[in-house]
Picture 1 (spheres, rainbow, N blue to C red):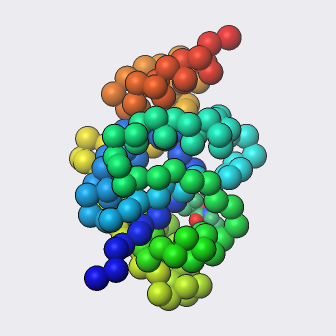
Picture 2 (picture 1 turned 45 degrees about the horizontal axis):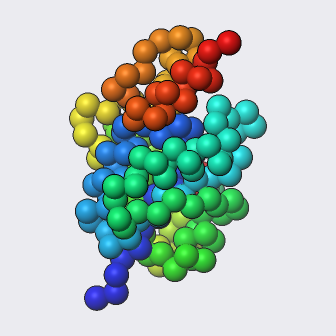
Length: 161
Ligand code: PNS
């Protein structure tokens, strides 16, 4: 059987423990996993794409089959360019499902040979999102336990005047 290359796309602004949990699960299921950071996802991201990639590289160093990359344009074009077979996405709760289903179906329409695979992060991370982490950190709240230590430190630096 051909080795399975999966792409885990997202904005990762910043990477959270929920993302990391999914990366670990994905790295066990697939032969290779590429975490693909969307360039310029928002007009005013908290971290630049380079910073997001740096943090991701640092926290995924322990997984030998995980790679960090950047992409722009259509996700399916990137997946095809990489010769990958799978798009990996996480679903935390039913509320994620509608948006994820819409994206997966649209991606299937654009590229029927690519399979989207959904995985569930650990229950403890079911309410965790990068948006909330950014908001809490920027308002001076604690994010300990929600993000890896290196991200916590970078958030602290960003939030300090
Ligand atoms: O972490 P996010 O912000 O939920 O990730 C969303 C992402 C990057 C997976 C999605 O916005 C995406 O795939 N963007 C690339 C452009 C694209 O292909 N759009 C059509 C999707 S059907």
